[in-house]
Image 1 (spheres, rainbow, N blue to C red):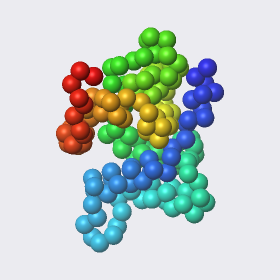
Image 2 (spheres, rainbow, N blue to C red):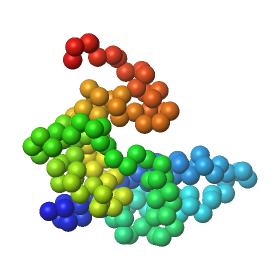
Image 3 (cartoon, rainbow, N blue to C red):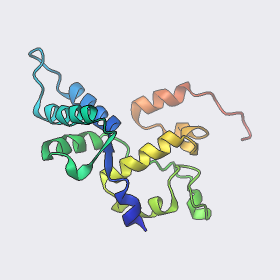
Image 4 (cartoon, rainbow, N blue to C red):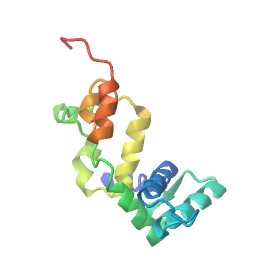
Amino acid sequence: MIGPLSRAMASIHITDIEAAINHWRARTPSSNGGALCPPLLALAEVYALMVFRRHEAIDDGALPAAALEAWHDWYQTTPDTPCIAICSTSQGDEQCKGCGRSFAEVQHWLAMSPAEKRGVWRRITLEGTAWRFNRYAERAAEGPQGAAVAARLPALPTGH
């Protein structure tokens, strides 16, 4: 079941290309007034074509090697799994209340490609219904930036 399901998610959304560009801009700022480092240039070319053609996503297999390598470098800085250790699929739910993934996505997560995983992340983030985005947002906070976000969340009433 994961084959057809995952192939539909094997594209990289333009927002991930933008995030990878910003990653490289922060990592290697231009020192001579505008020259881009090779990974940033590779991603910028892909981004420009996507914008020009009005494409929201690009198949991961269609990315030039340099752009895919630059995207993978950014991807390594993102959390791998949306799991918050409250898995309702183990209780029989088809959709996990904790992270928002389907039973098949939870079961096959380790076999999924980075682009497939980002597709799932995009879907669950847009849905925003999983507990990781509301009730248990502090569990989902990852790293110093996530901890700062969690600190600004309103406290839940005791007894819930």
